[in-house]
Amino acid sequence: MNSTASAKVSFKTQMLQAREDAIIQTASRLLAEKGFEAMTVDEVAANVGIAKASLYKHFSSKEDLAAAAMVRVMQRAQSYLRDLPPAAPMAQLRTVARWTMELKLRGEMPSLPSQNSTLRAKLIADAAYMDGLIDVSDRLGAWIQTAQAQGLLNPALPAIAVLYTLYARACDPVLEFLRMGGQHSDAQIIDMVMASCFEGLGAR
Image 1 (tube, rainbow, N blue to C red):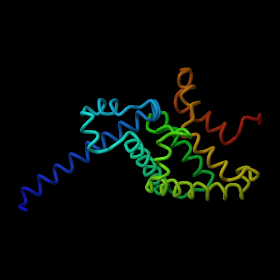
Image 2 (cartoon, one colour; image 1 turned 30 degrees about the vertical axis):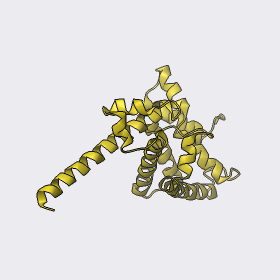
Image 3 (tube, rainbow, N blue to C red; image 1 turned 90 degrees about the vertical axis):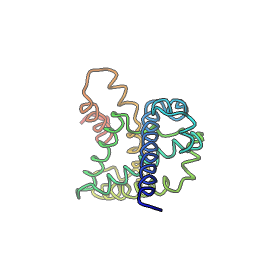
Image 4 (tube, rainbow, N blue to C red; image 1 turned 45 degrees about the horizontal axis):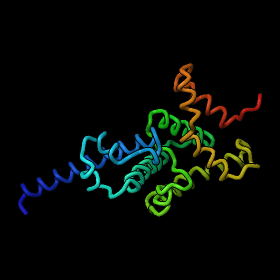
């Protein structure tokens, strides 16, 4: 194959990858805005500006598309955790919780699928997603256990309960409810939810 042909193949591959990235980004935004059940493939294609048939060349089903978006989010979380500068475990947990809420308010955090969702079944069978979830959970779990041993988190709570509480902040509807009220900035909203999460609701 001559160099011209190679360049053409390379350019085509780049264009296909760019289109796939646009599809995944759009799906991720729509998953954040309305959830898996309400999102449609037609809507994703229309937002990207392509025909539905073109979208199906990349993803054979709505579940495949949504799973790709969730895998991308999980990979982003893994990268973020790897790049965090060294700090005390409790500080790391606060940093991660704040970051996930910032993503949520920017519309970049897809909502978690419901218990009986076909997407949930797809994710459980997706090795890339599950490997990423285990990696993220192990990192956060280690920080949680250390913070509990240091007396900075309630040691009576199972570490898994604390982990799931932190995961819930990434899809917390309280963030949007407070924003809809129009009385607080996004930074203030995150500070309030952070306080309720880490300090609790009891008077101090």
